[in-house]
Image (cartoon, rainbow, N blue to C red; front, side):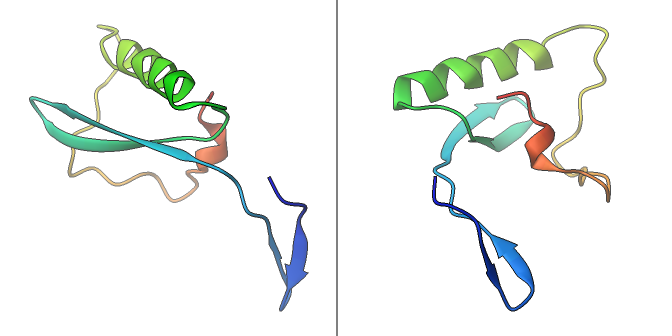
Length: 78
């Protein structure tokens, strides 16, 4: 990860991110994995994400749903 810098009033920082693509009966999804150090670790985190989606009491989002306006992908636990 690079150190943050200011550009035209914006704070910017480069971050390595693994994008894991998954498919299910509802369609395709790309999961950004921010904290993985290796491809294997990114796949492990993606499996944890899938496990969370399979929890029966969890409301499953449909592929056409858009994230809420205050969604911040830094809230993703991995």
